[in-house]
Every structure is written in C-alpha cells, then in structure tokens.
Length: 493
Ligand SMILES: CC(=O)N[C@H]1[C@@H](OP(=O)(O)OP(=O)(O)OC[C@H]2O[C@@H](n3ccc(=O)[nH]c3=O)[C@H](O)[C@@H]2O)O[C@H](CO)[C@@H](O)[C@@H]1O[C@H](C)C(=O)N[C@@H](C)C(=O)N[C@H](CCC(=O)O)C(=O)O
Ligand SMILES: Nc1ncnc2c1ncn2[C@@H]1O[C@H](COP(=O)(O)OP(=O)(O)OP(=O)(O)O)[C@@H](O)[C@H]1O
Ligand SMILES: N[C@H](CCC[C@H](N)C(=O)O)C(=O)O
Ligand SMILES: [Mg+2]
Image (cartoon, rainbow, N blue to C red):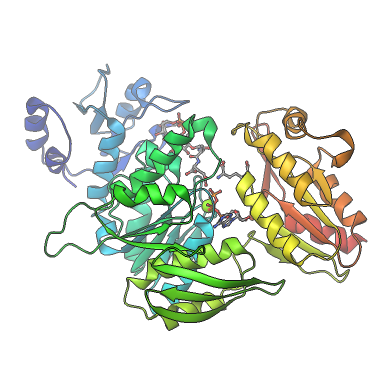
C-alpha cells in the first residue's frame, strides 16, 4: 500500500489529504505497536489503558516509521509524515482492512455473539462447513485456526489489525469461510469494524462483564451492534445477510428490529422459524425433533445438555442459508463429540463421572449443573471459583448456585490475577451459611479433595477454566490444567 492510497481511507483535513496524496512511498508494514515498527512502517498511535502510543513518537520515528497517524498533536525530530484523525482506533480498523485487501469479502463470515455458547457454536459451524467441503477458519477464545494451523489467542476477539491479518492469512491458506466469536467488549471498542459479516448469531444474554459495561442495558446495546452493523442495503449483487437469533431469550426478541437482514429465529419454547421439540437429555447425549419452517427432522446429539440444543440450533440456523440441506447439517452436528473444556468428561477407572467445563458465569454454571442433575443418581461435587480483576457481582451468585444445585460445593480459586484469592472467595461465600460448602483456596487441593471424597457413581464438576492450561496469579501465568490435575490424581491414587 502506498501512502497516497491512505488519502481515500482516512478522515483528515483537506491539507493532510493533499500531503498524503502527494507521496508515492510504498509502506512496508502497518502496526500499532511501538515494538514492531520497521523502516518504512505506518504507525498508528493508540491510547490504551496502560500505554499511549502518542507518548512514544520519537521512538517510532527513530525505528524508521514513515507515516504516523495520531489523534492529538505530537512533537518529534525526523522526516516522518504525521496525519491527524479524529479516532486513531477507527483509522487502524480502516487501514487494516485495506492493507490486507478486505479479506472478509473473500470469506463467508459468521459472527457469533452472546454471553455463553460462542466458542461451542463457532466449532459446530466449523465442523458443518468443513464436512461439506468448505474449508473454514476460526477466531475465538481458544485459538485462531488458519488452514490447519492453530495460533494462540490473547483475546476472544482480537483488535482490528490482528483480526484483518488473521483473515488475510485464512484467505492465503485457502479457507473459504470463517467462524468468529465477537465479544461485547470487542463490539464496544470497534475491534470488529470493517469486518463484513454475512451471518450474525445471537446466543443469549445473562450476567457477565458488568465491570466493563457498568449496566445491563449497555451490555445489551453492545451485543446489538453486531446486528445493526449487519449490512443495511438490498443492492443487487450484495450478499444476502442473515441474523440467527435466540427467540427464547427476551433480549433476542429486542434484537429483531435492530437489523435490515433476514432473520432466522430459534428456540425450544414453541416460538421460532427453527425449533427443537421433545428434548430428551441423557448421560449419553441429547435427542430432539428439529423443526425448520414446516419440516421436522430427528436429531441425536452426542453433546450433553439443554444448552447444547440451543447451540446446535444456532449453528444449524447459521449454516442453513449456505446451500446445505437440513439432513447434511444434522449429520455433522450428530458427529460432534464435544469441544475441549466444554462438558469434557475425563475418563477414569473409578466410575466417577468427572466433567471439566468452562462455565464461568452464573447462567453457564446453573445450566451445567441442571444438565448434570438431570442424570446424576448420587452426589454431585461442584468445584468452582471466580476470576479476579473481573466483575464482582457474579461472585455471591455463583457461590449460591454451586451450593443450591450440587450436593457438595467446593469453592476455590479461578484466575485470581492481581486480586487476593481469599478476598475473592470471601465474596463468593458471602451469602452462604457456613456449613454448606467446603472452602479451599488452592485449586489443585480443591480438585483433589472432591476426587478423594467422590465414590463410584458420583459426579465431579470442575467449572470455570475449561480448556485453559494456566492459572494467572498476580501477573504470572503458571501452568495449570484441570484435566491434567485430575489425571495426576488418578495416576497417584
Ligand atoms: C480492557 C481491554 O479491553 N484491554 C485490551 C486493550 O488493552 P490496553 O488498553 O491495556 O492496551 P495498552 O497495553 O494500554 O496498549 C495500548 C496500545 O499501545 C500499544 N503498545 C503497548 C505496549 C508497548 O510497549 N507498545 C505499544 O505500542 C498496544 O499495541 C496498543 O495498541 O488492548 C489490548 C490489545 O488490543 C487487549 O489485548 C486488551 O485486552 C485485555 C488483555 C483483556 O483482558 N481484555 C478483556 C477485558 C477482553 O477484551 N475480553 C473480551 C471478552 C472475553 C470473552 O467473554 O470471551 C475479549 O474479546 O477478549
Ligand atoms: N447456549 C448456552 N447457554 C448457556 N450456557 C452455555 C451455553 N453454551 C455453553 N454454555 C456454558 O458456558 C460455558 C462456556 O461455553 P463457550 O465457551 O461455548 O461460551 P463462550 O460464549 O465462548 O464463552 P467466553 O465468553 O468465555 O468466550 C460452557 O462450558 C457451558 O458451561
Ligand atoms: N473470557 C472470559 C473468560 C473468563 C474465564 C475465567 N476462567 C476467568 O479467568 O475469569 C474473561 O476473560 O472474562
Ligand atoms: Mg468463547
């Protein structure tokens, strides 16, 4: 990309437009990180919570940056071109899309938002599309999948530069589609600006991230952005856009008038274009009848739990508009054994059903425990805690859910981060009677305790960390993997 190409992209003064248009310089890279500036780079200064690029302009000029985008005046010595825009974050989104050749236009883009189920649904979409010859990438909590490679993820939804770079790598790796988790925080910050979604999926909205959004209404507004941004044109040649919305969730109903796109509503309570009826949950899986418009199909999922019926409906609805028959989609859904760290059963020879699950919200925890209680015949242990440096209101609620929906609540740490783990636990137990739970701050000790107590036929749920292979204490990431801890215990006892 030449500096002159930026003239049509950036919102700048007439004078800056002329300066940009006059430069034929070929940019070598685009970055918002002072540490990765190379000779010939375009550097976009972002003011974050910890670091402000505007305060490091001399450093990036010394590293060879040729074009610098700022939102306030800066001083430096050197020959870089500086352009002022109203929002450097938006400029980053605009430049990234163009720099990487608008890759989202070359991919069938699925965006999935909602409090719970995003990772699961993106993996279901991936399975369905791949089974039918559509090579599909993933962007989300666990990793990005590009071609056959899995790359580590910092955020569930990356900032615009990483997002566009990843999408362009997918195009280069011959992916034809991408299933992407779009978090509410990402929507508010504009991390998904410039990504042209074809299908947007809404899962559900329950308590989470209120530390960030402050009010539930703001949280809803954040999720709604994905739908209001889903195209607003019926121009010949435009791709048809589809919203797939959980109609059983009152917030889903409120989304219906937020989009100009076609809408597939789904639910299990008698409403929706797409419905699940006669749901039977067992400890082997879930059966139901799927009705789409006026056709009905039997479905036998290996996935457990009522909530996974919703996830399956969401994935079905998303793929339905992409030239697959209902039978084809259902066949794929039925083949899915599970997603790592989501209701993952850890095999052992003690006949104890050990389940590692990523439930880290009140709604997620309640759903998982009610799924377990539907088949459990004896005691149900629930090992759970709450993450630090995250919203605090969910803590006593999760403590209560653990105690009310299990026979043995073992309350422990999640990722304490920079908070004192014992203070987090004080909040988790703050509304509980003293003799209704066991409290063990050390997560390994808590897991071992539950496994020691459990008898053949009991269930042990270890919730909150799912696939995570670390525990963040202070600012240090220690290796910690719930599944590994369980296997260690069984190897030693
Ligand atoms: C609160 C929040 O959203 N924080 C995000 C934000 O961090 P920040 O504002 O602290 O960034 P910063 O460190 O001040 O850096 C600002 C700018 O300076 C640059 N920089 C920084 C350091 C340096 O030496 N040089 C430099 O140039 C950075 O590249 C950046 O452009 O920008 C970072 C880069 O994009 C994100 O990784 C980071 O997410 C942090 C890790 C985080 O924990 N976010 C959570 C709250 C989050 O976003 N969660 C959602 C939902 C999760 C879910 O429900 O699944 C998610 O999508 O992940
Ligand atoms: N549709 C659903 N409704 C309620 N709970 C669910 C649903 N799907 C999954 N869960 C529960 O939430 C946990 C997290 O699921 P998943 O990872 O798919 O959600 P997510 O939206 O990607 O979460 P995150 O916001 O952390 O990325 C699961 O382990 C399960 O306990
Ligand atoms: N995406 C969520 C995951 C929380 C997982 C839980 N283990 C925790 O650390 O609180 C977040 O970053 O808020
Ligand atoms: Mg996720």
